[in-house]
Structure formats: C-alpha cells, structure tokens
Length: 445
Image 1 (spheres, rainbow, N blue to C red):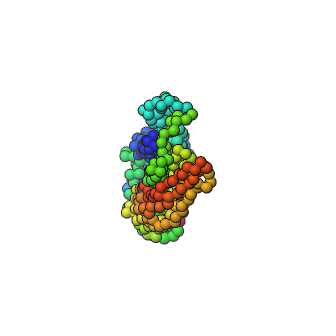
Image 2: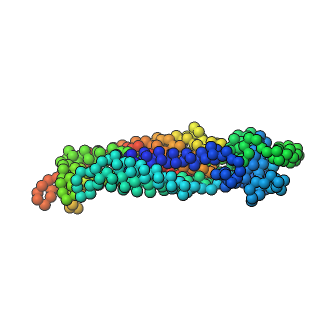
Image 3: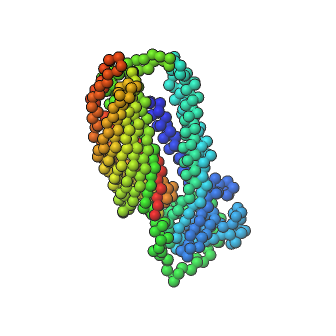
C-alpha cells in the first residue's frame, strides 16, 4: 500500500511537471528570427470578422489596435508583404481561434521516461523481499515497477500532450479593452514581438479600414456572441478516484477480536491474517447546469470502492456501495468568459442517498453466509480546480469529504460439521471517506 501511495504521488508530480513545459512553451521559447526556427510555427490564427468573414494565417505583429497576419502558404517574404499581409483592426474582430498541433508522442516520451525512472527508484529503495515463492530482489522490482510506472506515466503524458493540441477560442466582440487584455498573448505568438522591420512599419502606415458609419461596431447580440462569451452551461464530468475510508480497518479489527487472525505458513510463504484485499479505486459521473455565473446545480452517481477482508479459516467479509447525490456548487473564481484565465475554482456541498451492502461468510459452507443492506442519507463537502483547454473541454482535480452514518452488523454464529462454533462479533462499518478525484469535463450549450 505504501508503494502504491508513493507511486500515485510521483505520478501526480510527473503529470504536473510534464504539463509545465508543454504549457509554457509558446511564451518562453518564442524568441524567433524566422519561421523555420520557430517551435510554434504550426500555430495558426483564425479570425472571424464582424461580417462573418474568416481570415487565417500566422501572426507577424500585434499592437494596441490591430494584428498583422501573414496569409501566404510560404515563409515570410518582405517583398510579398503587400500581397499576403493583412491588417485586421480590433473593431473587425469577433472571435480569434489559435489552431494548434498536439504533442502526443512527445508527452508519451517524457511521461515514460519520468515514470520508468520513478518506478525503478521505488523498486531499488524497497529492498529485497523475504524468501518465498514470489519473493523478488530489489533489482527485479526495479525492472517490474519501471515498466508499470513507465507505461502508466507514458499514457498520462500522451493524454496531456494531445490535450495541448486542442484549439483555443477567444471572444473579442470588437471591443478594444478585451483585445488589449489578450495583447500579451498575441505578442507571444508574433514573429516580430518588439521591433518590426522597416517594410512592416511602412505596411502599418496604410490608412485604417473604414468603420461602419465611422463608429466602432458593437458585439452582435446573437447566438454567435453568446456562443463564445463564456463556457457552456451544461456540464458532464467523468472522474476516477482514490478513496480513504475506515471500512476495511473496522472489519479487520472485528476479525481479530473474533479470533480469525493469526499467522499461516504454507507453500507461498508466511501470511498474517486477517488479510486485506481491498481496492481503493472507484469512479463517479456528474451532470450539472449553471443557473448563474457562480451557481451550479448537479446530480452525481458515485461508485464506492470494494473492501474485502479474509480470515484464517475461510472467513470473509466484504463491502460494496454507491450513492446518488444532489450537489450545489459555488464558484468563487469562475473561468474568465474571455479565457484570459483558464483556471476555475469551485466549492460544493450536497446530500447523498447511499446504498450500502456488507456481506460475508464464516466458512466455505453456504449456510455460514450473512448479509446486511442499508439505504441511508449522508452528506458531502468538497472543492475542485479545473483547467479549460477550450470552452467545451477541461480537466479537473477534486477533493471530497463524505459523511455517512455507521452501519451496524449483528453478531453471527456458525456451527461447522465438526461441532466447532465460529462467531463474528457485533461490529460497525464506517463508510465515511475522503475522495481524491481526477478526470475531465465536457461543457455544452
């Protein structure tokens, strides 16, 4: 279990640091002398104008009121600036899209390298196992964990790298303040960031294009405006989660007191009972709707982890469960409608209706089986942090605390064929938990 926790922590750190270079690359590595040296030469601008015209190309220069676009398929040529250059003023711009390429294989490479190294380090530092049929040396564990962690981290890295290829939509709405709020980002994608060459200065001195009725056009009050003015209001999220709960420890303690513990030595080495075969992983899915910019209401289905405890003589007790939840979410920091900031912080509370099941046996005989079921209300509080790759897709990390009343399991007696009596004591199972979730969310209109 300790190795699993260490691996999860390292995987989270790997994913974070893996994301940073991919995310930071457009700004920090864009000291460009020509397009051939630019690592972001494949980032294209697609600009939708007020009259629904589409202009596409790479960005040459950006200043307070306009963008200079290169619309040629070839590399920048100063002699052809009048043919392929395009001046686009803020009052013409309804929406801008950054057309980006993903980095799937690059992410796979980084993730696999970091994961394999981390797994090998865990294996080497864990030492050799005690002698037994399935014992392993530290070197063997390093190879095995390196392969497992490398494959898993490679997959995570590939997903993150591919997500970086999701196009970015930014709504400008022909508004100068909005345009200037994005100006630093525009400049980071421009070939000439500070000092445009002489031929470009001459091109900039062309008279500005006429404005309609000599007035700045206002954003259109239409479906097109609302489409790009914020993220979607309907949300569907799917998350995997790891859960920490006392349920497995409650059962282990009851088995110890009932006399089902001890040490057994067999063909496969020495085993201490009760043994814990619990799985801490589960999943959840949620559908939600934004009534206001800061208030969201949703319904969630949550699958509980499976706990399974074994005793020395065939005794077993296991838990299963699930819950439907009604959630109210407050967003103290909703995502910026123009995506100047892509982070969103949310706090939530809700009421759960839990379906709990505890069943077990005192021997391999069917007559020794017992089961308790209970449907009961509970509650939860939590918070999440989302990052929007586009107005339709984001990834999220969430922490949730669940409060569920304890489930009472009555005492059970069993008389085996040899007239020996087994008794599991009356005990409680606590399903309350702390859940850490990671997943993705779709946002729809």
